[in-house]
Length: 155
Image (cartoon, rainbow, N blue to C red; front, side, top):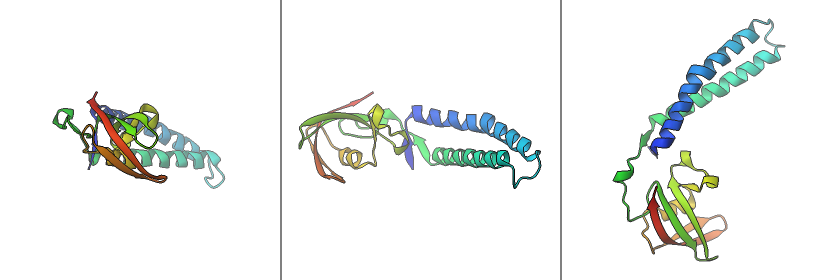
């Protein structure tokens, strides 16, 4: 089971409705039009429409599975004194003395450019459950990172 923020759950639901109600019917129309042009073996338009249909169906099924196996997390039920899902963590890499801030999110919400790391990433997993002042050790491809938790907040 995966946990999603309310915002991400709503984004997935909106995308799924858009695909089912708008994109897929349009793809079906394009496929019917391409099919009506005759010989399918020599019809590039038909092959392209089938490819788009397959991608659309695949995306719909993926989003349905995500929603089926996900639950919206209640931020009020999360501990405020330790790193947990949806917490914003400021920490210092003790090797480089560099400070970083990331929000811990589900894998579906991960976005490094927005400062969001997955709780299943090596750093996210190492930070989970730690309190301010504790040291987390993350096993990354380049070795072991020692990270000191400087602050924990919730948006």
